[in-house]
Structures are given as structure tokens and as C-alpha cells.
Image 1 (cartoon, rainbow, N blue to C red):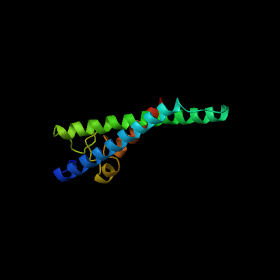
Image 2: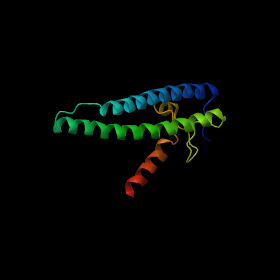
Image 3: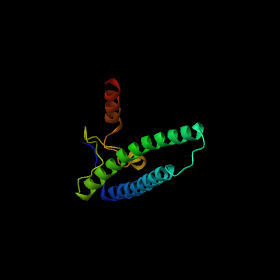
Image 4: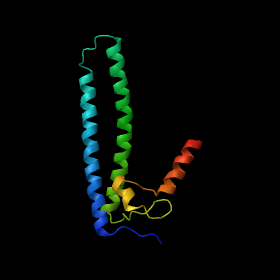
Length: 124
């Protein structure tokens, strides 16, 4: 049977989740501020416009990814709040290593299940 995290480890993961949440929220605010200043920029030529458009497009992609990560962080924090967070894979109930959780504290799946999900998406 897989080993769930102990209270100390759950607290460590909670701290990491809250730190990551704060970083992402700060980054999202910065992107929004940059987009607001974009409308007041004096774009001199097509090159300036192209560069601004490319940056905006990149920001939109980053923002989308960051919001998705924020949802995963909130999901993990809610589970901790309810006392339901175990650090076990939500698909197979295997242990998600503490090493993996320290890098990606919002991980919902073990490496094997994550690979399976990613491969399923590629095949569609």
C-alpha cells in the first residue's frame, strides 16, 4: 500500500503551494499591467507593432498556463484545508514522491499516470 504524507510533509507542501500561488498572482498582475501600458505605447513602425504583438501573444499563452497552474494549486490547497490531502496519485493511489512534490507541489498524479495522460492527449 502506498504511503501517504505525514503532517509535517503536508505542511511543507502547503507552504510551497502558497509561495507558488503568490508568485503566479504577482506574475499575472504584471502581465495585466504590461497589457494596459501597451495601449498607451507609441508604436513607431510595423517592426514595433510586430514586436508588441508577439510579446502580447506570448503573454496570453503564459497567462493561460499560469491560470491552469493556479487552479491546480487551489485544488491542492482545498484538499489540505479539508484534511483530504495525502500526496497520493488521484488516478492510481500510488505515492507521489516527496521529491516530485517539492518541485511541483500541485502535482495530482504520479509520474506513470502523468505520462499516460500526456500520451493520451498526444494520440488524439
